[in-house]
Length: 159
Image (tube, rainbow, N blue to C red; front, side, top):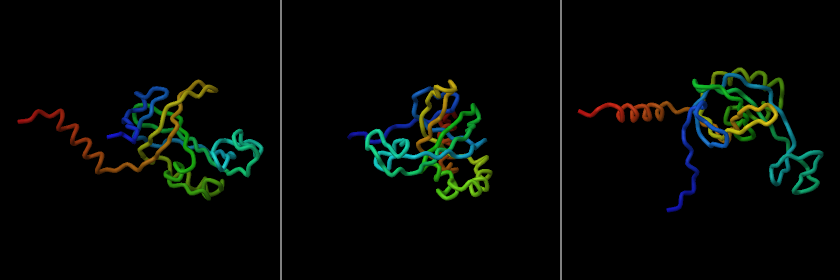
């Protein structure tokens, strides 16, 4: 049997190292205004002045980048989300594109707890670690309870 999925370990932010892929449950404690940039509609890479390094002159698409601060109880970290993952936070394209609508929705995200998957990278400009998020999922209470019960059973002596 061939494994086709990448195995992602659950870690605390304080345990994560640069280059590692992992999943963590964290709370959004600060959120910044989105930044928009142009990308090639074919490859999705950043385009400048309607030019893609691979595809030449293009009609670029507009893409958003959202930065937030996450806290998992062990550490806080600056985190970035793109495209579909911004939508998983509950923001629509219209809300992220309209400063007025975004300001209305921004405060609703503060205090939200989610499960974030991604990798840690080094920000060369600021010499800090950042969490580049590739997946956002809701927190499922039933799964948390099941995991806690299995941990309790593993440390409780059997009678």
